[in-house]
Image (cartoon, rainbow, N blue to C red; front, top):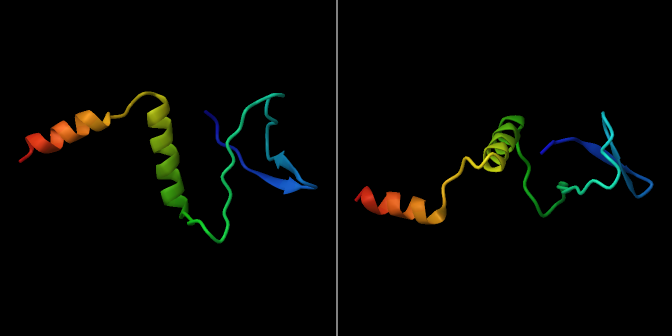
Length: 72
């Protein structure tokens, strides 16, 4: 996964920096009045967590619930 930024120009998304490969599938997140804003620190933490998930470094819901039950 790669994170990049861009702007909408003439109804098209123009990517900053190195262009994306033709035909790439992208996910677009954009701020609006109905959403939240992240500080630079929070955004970095979110991106790090997404990278961990992409690497398979996560815990299943069943494992988490089991661990919580065992703490009682």
